[in-house]
Amino acid sequence: MGNSSSHEPKGVVPMKSRFRGAVMGSLYGDCLGERYENMWTEIDVKRVIMYYNDTAKKVREKEAKEKGFVPHTDDSCMMFDLGESLIRNKSYEPRDVMKSFAETHAASKPQRNYGKNAAILLRDVRERNYEGNIYYPAKRQFSGTGSYGNGSAMRVAPVPLFYHGDPVKISNLASEQSRLTHTNPKGVNGAILQALAIEKALNTDNIDDPAQFVEDLYMQLNELTSDKAGLEIYREKCDAVVKLLSSKSLVKAPQYNKEIGSDVTAHRSIPAAIFCFLYTLNPKRIPALSKYNGFLRATILAAAYSHDSDTVGCMAGAIAGAYYGVEALSEEWKFACEKSDEAIKLADGLYELNTTGTGDRNEDPVAENE
Ligand SMILES: [Mg+2]
Image 1: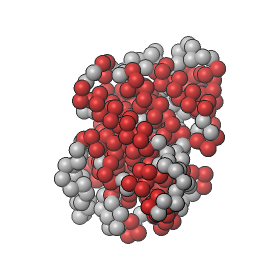
Image 2 (image 1 turned 45 degrees about the horizontal axis):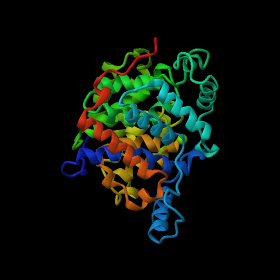
Image 3 (image 1 turned 180 degrees about the vertical axis):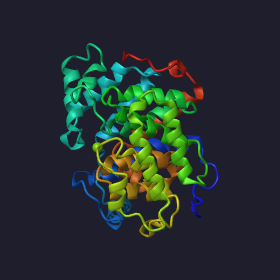
C-alpha cells in the first residue's frame, strides 16, 4: 500500500476508550450525516467541514440552546434498543429486542426516518403483540426473499462489544439480530461484516496495510457466515475497496459511488464505511481533511461522499471510534449529539459485562429461527 503507514493512534488506546468510541462514533456519525440524509447525493467535503466547525463553534460560544441539539435518526434508535436489551438481559432475547425496536418506533418522531419496509414490519409485530415466531414477519418480506437493506448493520455496534474477543459468537449474534428485520443473505452478511470490522478495529493498534485489513475481514466473513449464498457480492465489493485504496490519484465521490456504492442496500454501503475508515488513515489522502484527526477524516468523508449519509456515517464512525478511541471526538460534538450521555452509558455497560463476564453472556445466542 505504498507509504500509507498509518500515523494515528500512537501508542495503545485503552479498551474502555475504544468501546466508548465505537458507540459514540456510531451515534456521532449518524448525527453528522443526518444533515444530508434526504439529499441522496454527494456533498463537497469542504461543506461538511464547514457544518462540523459551525456546530462546534455554536457550542463553544454558547449559542447552542441545549445539550443534544443535533438529532440522531433511526440508526441510533435501533442501536440503543439492541444494546440496552443485551445489557438488561445479559443475553440476546430476540422478542425483547424486537419489542424495543417496535415500541421505540411507535413513539418516535417522523424525522427519525425509519425505512419504509422496516416501519411496516415494526407496526405489524406490535399490532400482533409480539406473538408467534418473532423472525417470521421479516422472512416474509419481499415475496419471501427478505430485505437486504443496511438496517441490520447500522445498529450492530453493540454486538462486537457484547462478545468482544469471540468472532464466532459475534458473527452468530450479528446474523441472528439481522434476521429480526433483514433475512436476505446480503443483508445478513452485511451485518456480520460490519460487526467483524468493529471487532477488528478494537483489536488493532496500527494498520500498516489497509488492503490486508479488508482482505482479512472478507476471509473472516467467508469463514464464519452460514449464508454463503450472499457472499459473492461482498467479494466483489471488497475487491473494489482494495482497488480504490490503491489508487494513486484522489478518489472522488462519483468513482466511490460507482464502484463501491453508498446507498440503502447492505452490500452497497458496509464496504463503503470500511473504505472511508481505511482511506483516511493517511492524512494526506484528502487534502481538505489533512489537519483533522483520523476519526474526523473518516466520518466527514463518509457523510460527504455517501448517498445514505447518516447510515454510512454511523458505520464508519463505529469502526473508526473502535480504532481511535472516544478521545478522538471533540467535546463540542459530544455536547451537540442527541443522547451522547446514554451512548457512553451503553458502552460502559457493555464493557462491564466483558470484564465481569456475568450472566448468560458466554452462552450462544438463542436461535429461535428454525
Ligand atoms: Mg437513519
